Length: 158
Image (cartoon, rainbow, N blue to C red):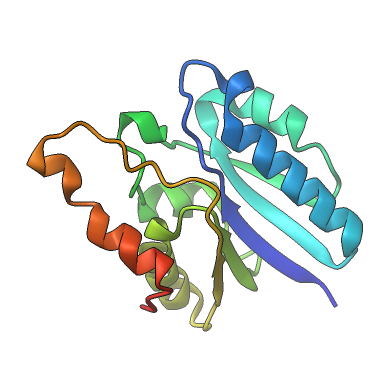
């Protein structure tokens, strides 16, 4: 049985895409998963400005990079979700999504809300965490993400 999985990369290094830890971690993880299970197919939302780098590293017949305008985490991309950009980049009329697989759990509620209303399905999400950056500048405004991080760690459901 085919399982079509939509994932968004944890894109942090806007100036040095080849050195981005999310690039190497995600590519290694997805290549391992498609090797283990021939039924998996990943649609990967990758930064449009570095699509050549990401596409080269994610090269596999069952991994489809989807270039999209994404801000790096270092420049405010932590909770970024733009339904218009996603709709323009990924054709939900042509491709079904069975599972949302995210390493940024803080984006899961917005993506799930969009997917489940867009596709009229109940798409489940699987989230994992390989890095939570809690070392932000010390302004009170920058600490507003802490409740979402705690919610993600406690598996809060939307």
